[in-house]
Length: 375
Image (tube, rainbow, N blue to C red):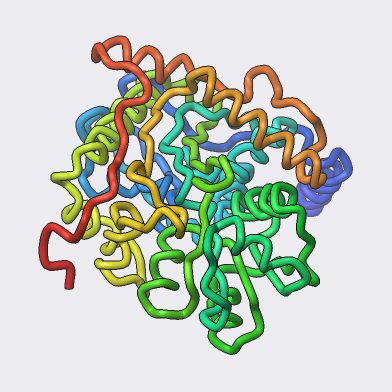
């Protein structure tokens, strides 16, 4: 075959792939044989508190106890869940730590890549669902009064995110309608609060603690006050689970170790240091408060900060379906129901059974003050 003919065939093949809408993706990743060392690429999110177990796996190197000797893991930071979704769909990451919205979205892309949700890293009512108002806003008698104040004003969140889902719950329960409801990143929200262009916004941790710590805006409510939950999941390529069950099981063992580490508040200061090493622009004290900080009840505070769920218990499946239905309502996914195999709980249940544990593993409680110097 001549070089010219070869080039033409490649062009035709590329065109056919585009015409068929990437309905079939050829996976080039070499999974090797069971027991062989492997090189994994993992997307993780140090800028989203419920997904911090992935950061712990990296910082504590828990994966080394369970993957074959000689294996390596490349951890890639995703500043937003959409970045990790894109990498996983392109088969450039085999495992991803994702907030609930992007995690559920990727399960609707099975024609491109069969990615399944295999674990719940954690859920909370005050990690993503946090309402802030500008500093000049009046003092409110209650979180509900703060929500009412938003009516007719300018508000923002990242649309399609857990913050957006919470915003729409607040609108409905408070019976309000902002004058403008803007789609803005956390950075833009912070800037607009500084220059007085925003009345209110919903953000997630650890950015929420940074806004409060720097005096940029005031926290006035959370999901605690409106019965709304947020969280994060572990997504994994089904091909990895099928071709390398030893690797998939090993990763889930490491995930369990990470969540058990997080349930012990004696590790609070070490955990803040682990997260600090993976972030920029966030003080260690901010990161500590994001997970352990105590807030007043009229600011949406409660004693339980984060539940380490690990497996998809029935209430977690119901929560996932409810969140997925929201994505369908805003036309981010094409179906109203999660596909039957979108959640694969087999690995989590097997690991729990072998260790004599059950889900949830425990929770992270609010602490009165930093237990060590956080400078």
